[in-house]
Image (cartoon, one colour):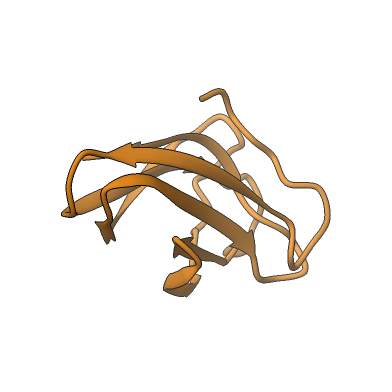
Length: 101
């Protein structure tokens, strides 16, 4: 995906659907940039269940300086919904890519 930026503060977010052939443990990787001075926390949910609450996405030193965080998730067969939601008033970091591995 191309990068995504979230307007607004807490509650702003984005959602993607990913397919899995069988139930599986996977790693969700989120590549992000945070050019601000403070963390931009987000909740991460898979299929409506929160996987991580208020995960800190730390400053990266610029809006074009990218870092990746990896989170363990469990997928079910067929379509799976991945949602990230900004928790703090500053909003979410800029997301460049999500990937499952």
